[in-house]
Length: 354
Ligand SMILES: Nc1ncnc2c1ncn2[C@@H]1O[C@H](COP(=O)(O)OP(=O)(O)OP(=O)(O)O)[C@@H](O)[C@H]1O
Ligand SMILES: [Mg+2]
Image (cartoon, rainbow, N blue to C red; front, side, top):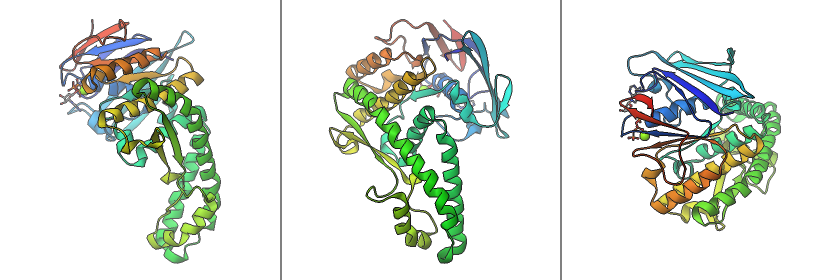
């Protein structure tokens, strides 16, 4: 569902505002340090219950205040649905349609935004945790039962690790292993089948952005020649020695291949940004094909990071996606994206519709 209106108070350096937004294309223009990325961060938080810049919620609260508040109004079949968030040092409280909900994941069923920002290359450059998060976000949208298995798996894993630490060599593990294997195998299967679904979208985005054949290999978190049970058994000795579980979906990774070889060894830094953008746009396209009219794309100052030709390619691809867009820019309109339905100006944290 597209967002129709956003209100924010005490969020970062932004002055309190209430803004009606366009269901298709919103452009936010302003100088450095004016609050453009903060605005995208508020939108992201509204759908994900977290920031893409920091894990620390208090960093998002305006200096000197205790909490911030965000209210988003969506249109669902003509009727408004309200998402409300209050968050700060004391925790995060979320309301959907006036009802308090327990988990931030419920927000994403209403407004699941994706972001492409100057840090996006980290998806490929940094450790596997980011890539697992990327896969899991996608899987969750295709198969919501994934979340329950994910939670059960991680509970069993914590208990198994605690047993390993507490009892060392003699730790009885069989009680946790059944649960670990059952839920872990399901996680791995769901991730695999999700990545198969994602791949055609990624190949298309990879060709459009980079002229390269981009493919994916899922590394489940254990030696692929063994079953999870066998791999777990073989690692038991090592697990006892180090007091931690070495194999399983918590160690999974996603290997991105370019023309069949690991991307890391093949592409430049600029290409890495495009490759990570291709992954994000592929995920968005798949999501959009399954739940049309629900997704939003946040593009943070794309012009600052890419040369003219790459920017043109990115913009051309983004334009084909039927999603709600929020784009920031230092200077003004972006060639190729058409005329924004709404144009905002930010200066010293003050947001104004042009
Ligand atoms: N919690 C906070 N309280 C008050 N001000 C904050 C807070 N967090 C960040 N700021 C201020 O907000 C400004 C940064 O805003 P933001 O990163 O959104 O700018 P921007 O328009 O995206 O800039 P750029 O074009 O450089 O990317 C900084 O001046 C920063 O000091
Ligand atoms: Mg910025």
